Length: 445
Image (cartoon, rainbow, N blue to C red; front, side, top):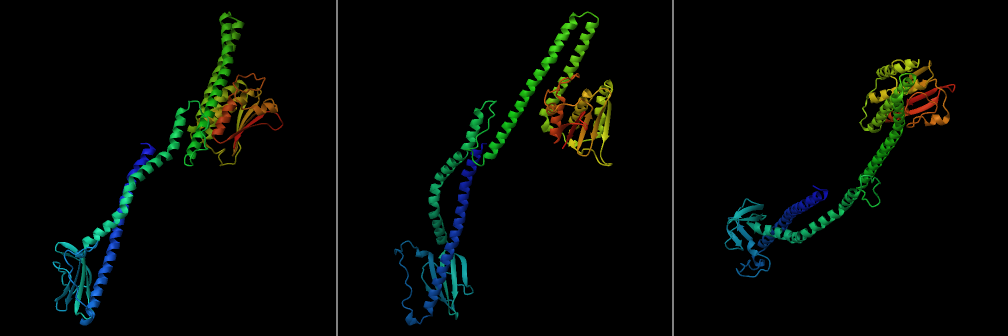
């Protein structure tokens, strides 16, 4: 069910229910006020009769006359009222009604509700000070209920007559209130798949601005992701074109070459080209994973000792081929963990492997590559030829490799390291070793 229909349902059902509840409360309040008014009048009437009876006989005037049965009484109905007076011995001294006999109750004082001739009456009994007579003034309860209902209906009928108009106004107000939502949905529905420009916030209601702002943020992230994907695809196509062209050329040479030195050289070049292509594809897959998998990054305590052992075993064949010694220095106080971190062990293994692999490939043969840990960072350093400031600043760019490199590579290793470090809240820094020779790569906060 739509928000508009839900609001309309709540209002169209809730408004009459609230109106009905208000009407019931009004009837109850009106009944209380009517009871209070008529009870006061009964008390006053009884006291007036008592005062009249207390006067000497010469000052009382004529007795109360009986009302004629057909006398016009305007809007009042005196048939619903009754007065009676009894002497000490129970003799009825005065009664203003025929056919209605208020009961004699000498022990009663105040208000009582009694049934007389099948109708409910409210009667007020007033004893004289000397006990010579008892005055009773009564009224039918029906008169009170009718008056309370008339008062309430007199107020409620205008509201009841305007209730349909009120419901129509509420329905119109709801439609106008949700119109910005319909406009937003229409605008989104009309957009093409590549239309990622931000939505306008100028005319959006304040309640919709957080939603529109969140959607604009989503559009921005999607656009950035698509830009990364396009850049990745373009870079990958560009980088794959070169090794594929070399392999095709070497294959043509290999097919035409006869067994001997020429064929052996062609086979060696083709083997190196296949190795480069294999490494490039592996690096591209790793880069694609870290670019798209940041949102599902695992968060577990990192066991650096196990990771270092695994990665060094992976890099040992390359180190032996180039006669380079691998060292690991745990430079932290005893009993303290090196670089405490919660992260993805598989991605951090890729980070270490790429760092050591690059250091081994570009270090002079017979030198040393050192992996060093402390409480805040890890470092990898070698004795490579010093790089110019411009080359040092470009390290970590995709597909960038300094000139003069003989080892096969794709220029993606450090880019992958930078991305993995960023996913774990770490930075990647390049600097020359002390003395200006060699390179130190530091990963840390």
